[in-house]
Length: 276
Image (cartoon, rainbow, N blue to C red; front, top):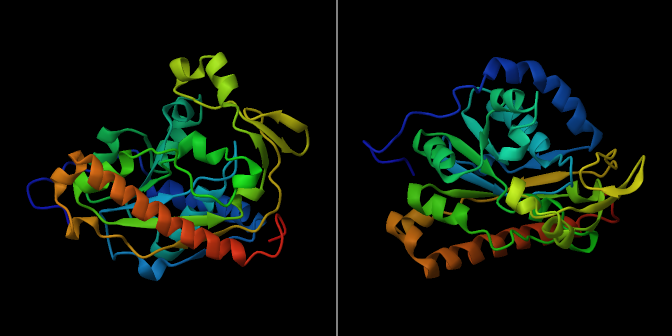
């Protein structure tokens, strides 16, 4: 559904550089091939933005799910399409990292930037579970768990855009998360300093058991991402629904149930962990 005339804001992400994306794509394609990656469902996407893509975030401290999705997206729909992705402010503040990511379409996670992207006609990729989701313990690797974070639902209702589920399987088998470490994060007061609520403990080569802040070499799990049918909340609710807690909760339950069903089906295709 298009944004009504007169409400569109200036497009955001002026640093996004399609030429830069064409330059780095071969490198990311090679990275994605390490995971024998497969992305399905592009035929289900709306022809153009604005719309919101919501995914389950997986893979620990070096999550491969977004590079896998984006390389396939650029290959299928070209680098010129205005696709943006939300990132934690801590990540974008890292020296030498933030400017590069912004050229690739990264936006700081927050309602102002997200809403501007959608109202400007863009396509926005969001992993609403963030650090809580990306460090799910190993037994929960095939579970949709956004930690009751409802902001993306309010965003979609407020901007009146459809929501596309993007469910990945296998990315959370590239590292073994032993614990989220929520108590450790609280003791270290990371939430107050950096808005980080976890200090996970993970297992992976070459160091074995390490804190989540130390990179590990990803295990060669096969990663499959599936794009689902768009969920058209604007056909049922107006923008005022973003302020209705009952409707927001109902929408949240609908999309998480939908994504869990997709994840269960994808996980059933896998004969064994890591090898896929």
